[in-house]
Image (cartoon, rainbow, N blue to C red):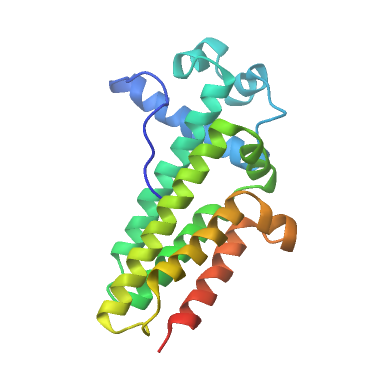
Length: 200
């Protein structure tokens, strides 16, 4: 996961910024729980107990608002995943911490949300960008582990390509379709496979 460029509305300061942050948190929680394809802007305003004008102050359309919320979700998740990673010093522990933290961030997200993201190109692009950034991060962690002697010698570029392929399949909902696994569970299983496969 990696922070994506900001697209979430005008810059506000003071109380306006605090309310904007609170609204994005509420909006993100609503969308990850229920998806967004079936929700209108009127629905969102009613559920968030604000006016449509307030929502238009955050983004110019429902589509822009959804993309901004997806960006907000991944930005927040990235901060927490990197914090979990920073708490570990052992190379194997760092790889495990990273993938399990990704799984933990995805765990509360509904399948409907991921289905809606996959069907909405601007949001799918955000998820794909974050997925590929996460795959690069995993490659860096494998490199660290091999260099440190914690992992056995592997062809890192091949391992990274396999990992990227699996992570992209998770992002594109292909793993869910083939196995029935939620995205978070798929990441947890990927973590176990990687750790056992790399162990000396």
